[in-house]
Image 1 (tube, helix red, strand yellow):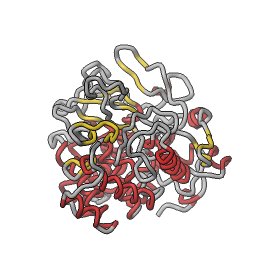
Image 2: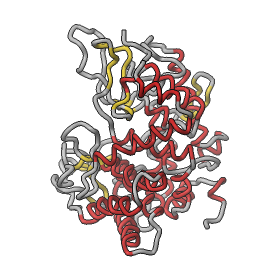
Image 3: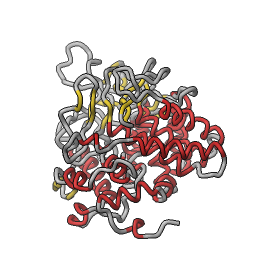
Image 4: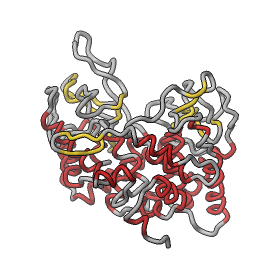
Length: 442
């Protein structure tokens, strides 16, 4: 069985840091991913750290969001951040929107995965509505931050506005009420839409806030009608198994004290819901119904992450899966945890999250690669005395870590996006009321 303690001097020093200093180390290390994984020519960012990884449009959205954080933290200059942001935005502005199999996008949307050098579609990936929304959330973050009356910052804001206005959200409904998840030139719209609570709130907010091709708010209500409210371990909450669902839209939108119709009926809000979801994760890990190694109230994080998959020793009868959206309590669960998921829950449950971070660091030092979280680790699968650890990081993981640490510490991204007129309009169209939405914009 792998060791659950470490005498590694760097690890020991990190464990002993005060909370704020520890978050400094983790946040800056996560930002380093974007410095290393970005093509400076076109601003595209690799999906993951493994060699020959394509770009992910969602990861570009996270990059555009973390550059302002890096400027405020002193990790890069404003001019450097502006240059990186403009490289990406100019690429998308000028990209092939014909919808062909070798294009970059169609109707304002973009293919999920693009070649890092050419920006053309790879892996026969889908035109992704949610990943386009995450890209646009990042673009809008950049436009709110780079607000100076200079030629370059004016250009950036104009490009972002053009990209947002170009998206045909109504087309993405394919004549129905809700937004379809994807489209391919080979077969048209995919045969499934968004059902049940998931990361799509930011997608619907952007679709409702559009000044050119907005959807009707009946589409949002049709989606929320598929929600599943449950009572698990004594916590009543809007159910979604994987933890990232309770985090991603929150990276940009401050849901504290604002409620849509569904949440008004439940006397709750989405921020409180994410806190309860975090408690459900902790309780599940403590109960550990499948008796995996290492699970407890300070070792949790079932979410979308890499997994052992086929990398299991010959003769081992256990079933492990690869990249998958793991969740509680209904699974899938193969003993794989994502350490970064605790950091992404900092705004909702800071004491529990920090306790988990320190505990997992002390017990599983192998899960940190280059001072950065690996996608995941599995204490139940041990080889040569060490737990299985994913061989790299994903840009999504690193981006959410930077953003949620910052939202916990200063609320910086939330403050920026509260002033974004498209976000405010989209939330109001969805029926959100109360809290900061009631206050007049500056």
